[in-house]
Length: 366
Image (tube, rainbow, N blue to C red; front, side, top):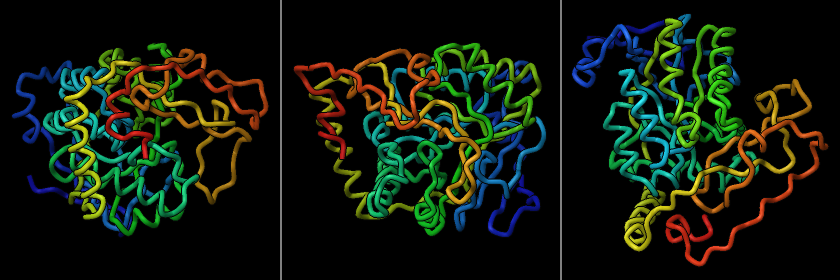
């Protein structure tokens, strides 16, 4: 069906596609009465780097009341991403996966599986660093190596959609993404699945925010076990409450840079050698909290006044085995009674006689 355009700012074109004909071949066995499915597909023209998601950006509103976009950050992980994909498939619906380049190189088969199932593959940097703390050159490397790494793992171009780690968006990197025609994707609803292992709490986080907003881009993390184990039941509830899923696709694919493609190709080849030498670790994956930050915060643009004294911690994913298991997620993210300037006590590092696959691949993680 020929797409029709809706009225949006000049720098963005969103094409709305009827989805019934497009999705039936892939989901022929779906029960439409019990499954979320996909209400419509929104095609995004990423020229000049449009910004979406009302936690940070207010100028574009493409969702109708009751519509949601499902997004997943920080993967892929062979321990948890398959369960997320299973839940999505059981509901005959589709999502956008913002992958970390290092994780994609480590698990290229999972990257390809995500794409094969019809989901959109996008970028979340090379190693999930806070770009506001890096030099311009280092930040560019995080963006470009991540893009090239995920592209190499997939074996074809990915979507030119980008999400900042910790939603921290320095202006100089925004300008770079605009020059590279990368859409910047923020969020409207945060599941806070990185904060708690409680299924009911995670569900309540999503449903209560949706109740207030009525629609939005939802943030999950496919490396979190609570999401892997409870996504199906949350999707069931979204269906019961009559929410509709919108799937985002790009008008054009992302272009990579040759120098970073070369580096990504070498890393992928190194991965094959390392994987043959040592199987992947199955250790639970958790990024450490940011030094000196508390749990609750308001995410704001760098040029906007801060609404609260506290700032959002760096929610994160794992370094796939580099950090030993510490306290539970719920314990680690409880509000601290200490000063914001007080640094959390570092977790003890477990001694290992053999390196992990990720260490074999990347050494000290450049």
